[in-house]
Image 1 (cartoon, helix red, strand yellow):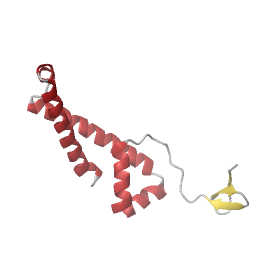
Image 2: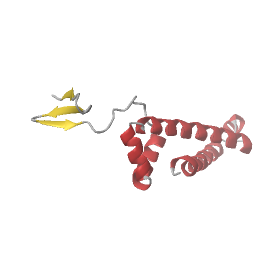
Image 3: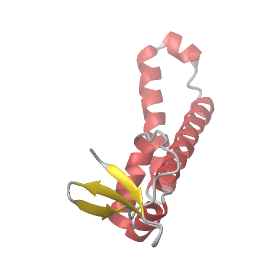
Image 4: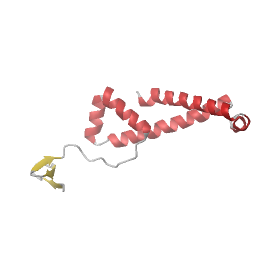
Length: 125
């Protein structure tokens, strides 16, 4: 059973773990948002390559909100790119009715290109 207490002298919160009082050094996240695949990829990238940014976001309690925003932005960009590329290349419902395998090949190609663009421009940046 964990119990949290507040010390008025130094303004810190402590969690009681057994016989020890451990300070809560990291601020609580303001709100827990759902993080998807794009946010998780970016998290892995900043942990490995942008350590200062990762530590700053973590210690200020803004990491979850930042990753959720990156995830949402990346998904929106990917969806828009897929739609624009499909329209530009004539990959539409008529092609789907006429030649389903060709439509699947083209859509997979378009999705893969859009994911590469999102990775380069948003996730690994």
